[in-house]
Image (cartoon, rainbow, N blue to C red; front, side, top):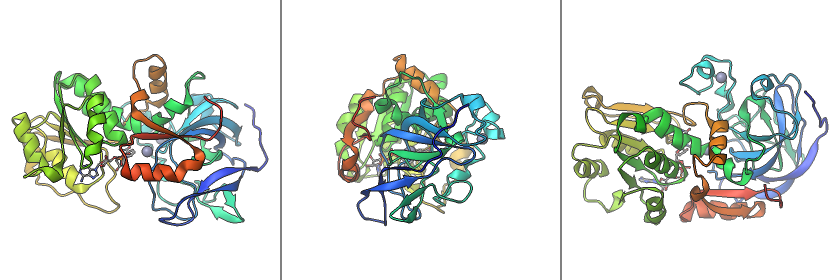
Length: 378
Ligand SMILES: NC(=O)c1ccc[n+]([C@@H]2O[C@H](COP(=O)([O-])OP(=O)(O)OC[C@H]3O[C@@H](n4cnc5c(N)ncnc54)[C@H](O)[C@@H]3O)[C@@H](O)[C@H]2O)c1
Ligand SMILES: [Zn+2]
Ligand SMILES: [Zn+2]
């Protein structure tokens, strides 16, 4: 395979200098990829949240781009067969395809996920970014708010040449997480045709969960969110009943149990709060209900619930990035019109408006916000 680009590239990136300050678009130097790494020309980015990581940093953990150069000893190409110029998606959860998790057909939580802990550095303990003479930290081994980034080969997957990057970029993380929770973890379709599902949180992931529940034949989908602005869109995606826990006279799980008779067949937590995780479990039917945790709880938090909830037969599960390696296949499914991603994308903004996107994220009914780093269309 060919390598290119021994050179440092200077390009634009959005830098988070410190907590609670707007990002600034700056010139950064991006080093060539080291062993086992690839440098990607990032074309498209998508939604994000703020992260508590070392500063200054380049955020963004989801994006699509093309391979600009390949470091020494990149071995994974045996499996993923990419070369210069190929279209790729970057994943925040790597797939080494060698560890026991990757080799098992039912799991995807790669044991090399040591990329994830918040060191802000590549696996060799260094950074590839410099700005104004300062070292800039990475995010989850991805860092996509930049025109060029360097990622580990195991965090990149080749996608179809004709995939439109401005849509399929949402398959980097959140959509496979939501779809996978329904298809692979809960297995909604397989167990219960015409089932009842509850979705806690109607943001990006929750919206994908709703679509997947509908596609799995759920006849009733109860959406729970404290922002009622989310309800009209959620209904168009498949939610049949909307609940705002802040407007209810009793705990939302009690209302769900009443609405469903004995509890829902499936409940999904797509918020990341302990209380709603307990509510998810308590919303499930006592003997066959399945609760799935997708949200990321605050660091060091503990989930405490009455074990009798499980004794009667309920199941509590969880998973990351859809729990099976399915991302490049989902791109193909999109191209073949087996899944429709278009209704999930609510905004497309130029890179310069990155701070406006943070505002939208806080105050609006956004689901996915896409950033164009280039003026061309892909
Ligand atoms: N498991 C995985 O692989 C994985 C991958 C990516 C993200 N996540 C996590 O999933 C969670 C959801 O991500 P997202 O991008 O959809 O977030 P989001 O911010 O787009 O959506 C969260 C939604 O929850 C609602 N909400 C907040 N507090 C609530 C409450 N108390 N009751 C009801 N609704 C409430 C918000 O109004 C919002 O609509 C986050 O914790 C994220 O870190 C997990
Ligand atoms: Zn692995
Ligand atoms: Zn994500």
